[in-house]
Image (cartoon, rainbow, N blue to C red; front, side):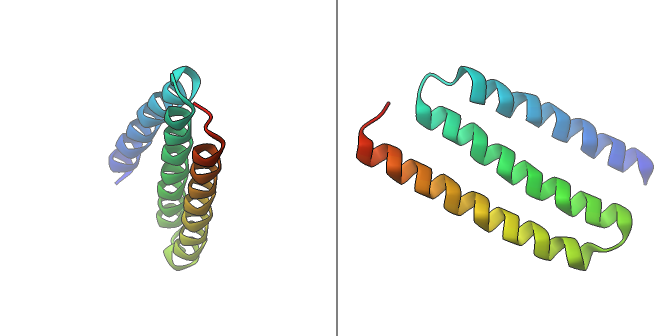
Length: 88
């Protein structure tokens, strides 16, 4: 089982570098917003993985759903603001 968790951590770390690259070098603001949204999704996955490790998945599912909802609403609000302001 530990090999499975090590593989998951390596995959999450690889995705983190991809999202940070998108966040740092995105040619537009919307590309950067996509990177932030991806990091929010990845944080939700990490919370669920921590819940599996500690054996308290029921508690961490509630926390991760709340975090995912906040991340989604924040990304939606930022996209709507940037669309209305005309920034590119």
